[in-house]
Image 1 (cartoon, rainbow, N blue to C red):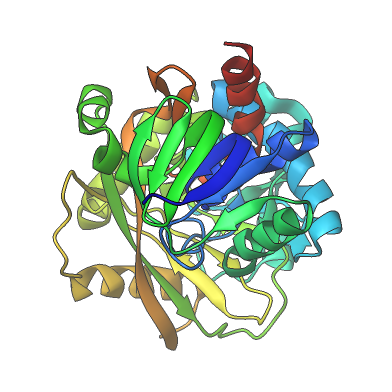
Image 2 (cartoon, rainbow, N blue to C red):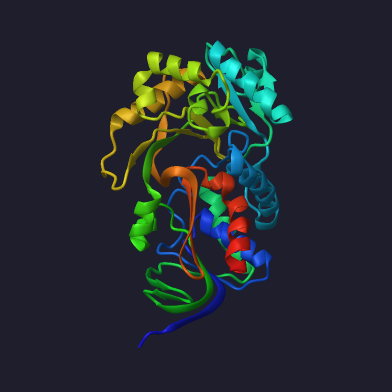
Length: 372
């Protein structure tokens, strides 16, 4: 006999940041919510990232979502009691063409971008030789990625959201979710399982071009033992974020980095770091794409990250505390928002900016889903 797990106005499949963002917005609307998660807590991209709300470097709808998400993060940090720093990002420029991009970016974004001299950069963040200048993005923020999703889930549970942990979704149909523990009657359903879209809707994943992106990241001891308030980006980051794409000088940066550091460009290096609450640095990262990822981690990628971060910080070597591989959904567009059946919405951030945008994306999804 199939047991019943009750009913909810909204059932969310997946307790990562995208799923939790939909639960947050649904609770604010006064809806009853149930969340189904196959693991005992969030273990995927939502806890393996930099904890960086990378607002300013986005463009288009991603920037709109990021600005709304920024407001939501600050509000939720106060209500749920998790660590947050509203201290922006410093992008360290190490070449004249990178300074040119920043000047063009500032001309477009106004007070969202504050240009910095070399001395102003090194006063804010530790950096080795070769700093030409930089910019501060005051709208960016940081959370502890290892804490924030768990704190949000606990806070939502206190608001009456029912969590079904260690529960696998076996079947999905309009109004009904079959799980390994029983059935849930759903008014509406949001499936937010990140790169595992193809486990539930393989045809949709194929048609949408959804695949997986794997990245190498590390936690290292801070060699300077100083407080670093902002997140830190570099010229490599300019090649990764859409906000810089319209800058006329960006092709010069791409050409120079490709000529000087071809192996780093080929592995998709985004040289950046954030400081954790305990003082250690989260550093990274690299990018590799496939529908099915090989399970083997190449040590060469970690060596590249460590060498380039040490050079950025102006130290001979770094002490590694932890290594891991992040995996997120990727596609040729930044967001997936699809309706494979009535009352069911499949949602994924397919650009590696889930922490930055999910809390702004979710209200738009629910506006549409609840109206249909």
